[in-house]
Amino acid sequence: MEQIAHEIKSVMLVYFSGTGGVKRIAETFRFNLSNRGITVIENNLDLSIVNCNRYSNMSVDQIILIFPVHAFDAPDPIYRWIENTGITGDRIAVISVSGGGEVWPNTGCRNNCCRALEQKGLTVSYERMMCMPSNWVFNINDHMAMWLLRIIPDKVNNILDELLCGKVRRTKYKKGPFRKLITKLEKQNTAKFAKELAIDDNCTGCGLCAAHCPVDNIELRVKKPVFKENCIMCYRCIYNCPSHALKSKSFMVLKNGYNLTAVERRMKGIELEQVEKCCKGLMWKPVRKYLLKIEK
Ligand SMILES: Cc1cc2nc3c(=O)[nH]c(=O)nc-3n(C[C@H](O)[C@H](O)[C@H](O)COP(=O)(O)O)c2cc1C
Image 1 (tube, protein in one colour):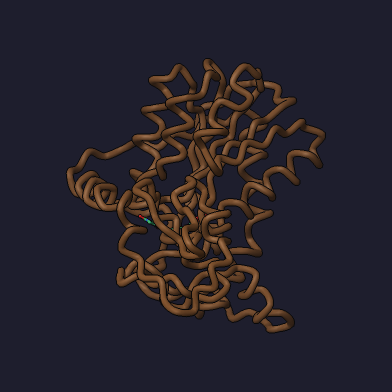
Image 2 (cartoon, protein in one colour):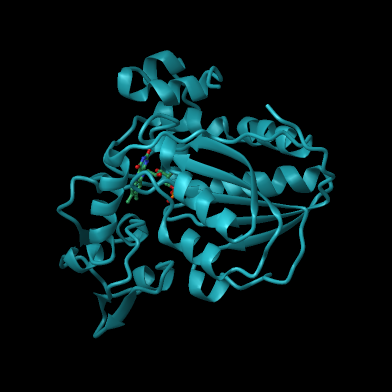
C-alpha cells in the first residue's frame, strides 16, 4: 500500500443517507475527527440541488464522501454533488456503505463515482466499504444489526488512522457487463418508483413524507401525498411513515420496515449472539468477515 505524507487539519464530510444508516457513520466520523482536533465541515446532501454548491469555494485538506450502495452504484445525490461542486484538486476518500459488504458485484459500486470525481480534477486516494443493516431486499436479525452498529466507532477509527497517516487504498476494478446491466435496469425504474406506491386509509395527511423527502419529490395535495418523478428510491418515506400508510409491491422493500433506533430499543440489555451464529451462511460471508475484522 502506497503512502503519501499529508497533514490534515480540516475535513469536509460529504454524505447522503436515505434511511439513517450512512448518517450514523457520518456522525461517528465527525465525532472522531473532532476528538482528534480536526476541523469538520459537514455537507449533508439532503435536498442536494440546494446543497451541492455549498462550500464550493472552500479549501480543505481532505474530503470524505460517504454514500449508501444503491444497485451496485452510488445514488443520484452523490452524482449531482460531483457534477455541481466547484471544489477541485482536493484529496478525496470514498466510503461506500452496503448491506452485503465488499463482494462482487458490490465491489464495483465506487467505480463510476471515482471516475466522475477524477474527471472533475479530484484525487481519489482512498476507498473503503463499510457495512450497515440492509434496508433493501434482505431483512437481517437484530443481533447482526446490533453488531453492525457497535462496530462503527472501531471501523471509523481504523479508516481515519490510515487516512491521516497518508495511506493510499484504491480498488482494482474488473470489467464486466452484469453489474452495469443491473445498475442500468434498476436506475431506469428509480425515478418513477414512488409513483407506484399505494397510499392506504391509514394516511393521516401529516405531511412527514413530503417534509423529509431528500429530493423534494413529494407534494401534499388535499392532505394526501402526491409523488413526482424524481424519486431516488431511498425508501425514507415508506419506512418513516408514522401510520405505515405507504405500500410497495416491490420485493426490495422490507415488509417489516427499517428502524435502527427500534432495533436498539428491542435489544437493550440482551446479550448478543456470537457473530458466527447470527451472521451465518454463504451470503453473509463478506459481512461476517467485516465484523470479525478478517477482511483485507
Ligand atoms: C434502492 C436500494 C438499492 C440497494 N442496493 C444495494 C446493493 O446493490 N448492494 C448492497 O449491499 N446493499 C444495497 N442496498 C442497501 C443499502 O446500501 C444499505 O442498507 C445502506 O446502509 C443504506 O443506507 P441509508 O440508511 O443511509 O440509506 C440498497 C438499498 C436501496 C434502498
